[in-house]
Length: 193
Image 1 (cartoon, rainbow, N blue to C red):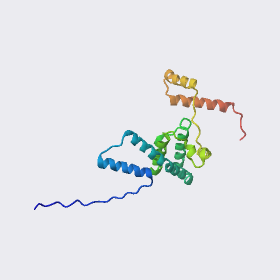
Image 2: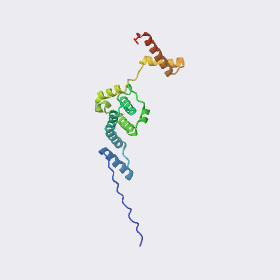
Image 3: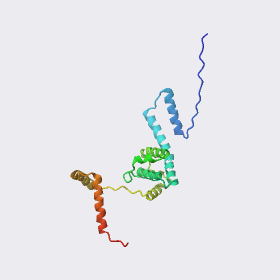
Image 4: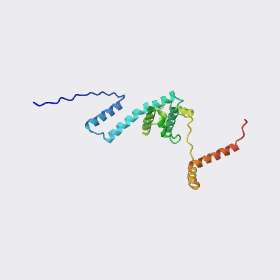
């Protein structure tokens, strides 16, 4: 008589997810692990877009809640600058290294929303609870102003000036601003003290 090895013990695993998109992602991942069958590129992209859109709403709600509930923190200011940058990156550029100063949950919320925004489905201010009125209110409170820009002819002349003078752009810009400020201070009427 030969010894029959005992049947391997079955292990049951139960996972809970919060929505249908996560459930589908989990099923697809499990199928890939068990069968080795990979999703086609089209299926993966379709699943990816659904997941991105599903994460965007709670991500933006997390950002809005942090701004409203903790308005005096540096994180709130960074979040408003982030939203302003998503709203109009040319007028309100956002330095992505500022995400490093955010709590992990807030940084991930920004990344999740940014991932949605790249799809170009709808502008951020349409998703905010207070729409663009609230966004502009936050921008005013945190003194977020549009970036200064030169006209094309000015930018070209400025770029040439760097090569002609041998001075770097920052140095030239500081000198130009100092001259402009001095000019207007000299010409301003004296105020009573």
